[in-house]
Length: 430
Picture 1: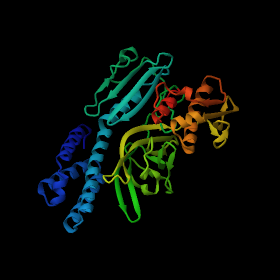
Picture 2: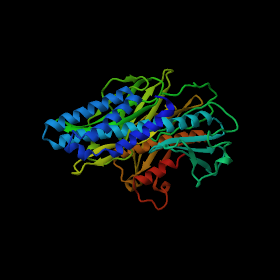
Picture 3: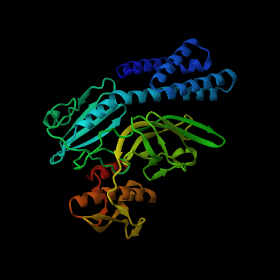
Picture 4: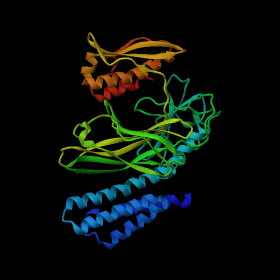
């Protein structure tokens, strides 16, 4: 398939998907109109990826077999939903592969200047890029958005006009160029482009994308199946994955694996054995850590939304925002202790090397702050870890490393004392 033909096939697949009447197909698995649409989707998917086409064919045949020979409407509907979800998720991937990926590559390649900082993320199907000047103390920035439908680039009129920072919005060309460096902090992953005074590879990094979510349940428990796909042109090595949220992390016992370009692997999460099956949790993500051919370590994630089943008995998972890869950087910060009580505060001890000298600092949270936020012991530990990472890095940059206690005085005014208040506190440390 020629690159210029891909958008029209994505558009055709989207229209066919919108015309599928799943309930009608469940009642009549021999409906020729629906079968012709699915066969056309199989052909389109095969053009993008032979494996995708064969997987859709398999799901369709499994559905037909179940619908024709079983009286279990529930199981038949599950097979139909699995097939429909697969179609929708693959169309999303093809959209990301094309206009978003091209715009992202163009933006990342051309914005190279030591005077600017850049944060980038995918929200829904649009690439958002925020750019500002490092020396500005006003926090002024531009907000550029790459449209997934057309590949066009627009800017947010509520922020600074692009002409004040850039020559051209289309390619984000600045007045001078340097090499690119990337930093990553915790699970709130962003990309920041800085001058590293080092030579970087011209090849694109491997990009892993989590998709193809399906669910199953039975006597042995409930499971969520994710498809991890390498949507780049570079091999991804030593792949580790897991489920991570605020004060929660699950990792499989599987050995790390590798994925060549356009290859995928289905992985399994036993959700019914974990608290997120019945308990709502903040900042839930599927995460992937892996390496490129040159040994560079990368991190990417996709946000997960907990969706209650109709009975309200438990949650299923739905994938939402995807975040492009960041380079994993070890800034030398080490945790020296578990949380310990010191009067009316909980503290942890950290160390970091600064100019060859090892320095230590205690970072803590007052009991009044943890009470206002409603944090239990596990959440207090997670909060201290996240706050310490940001606070210590900030103090090192300012050459003023000391112990620090977070209190209610640092919360934003008129806060509701909920998790959003904590996020604002955490994100205020820059």
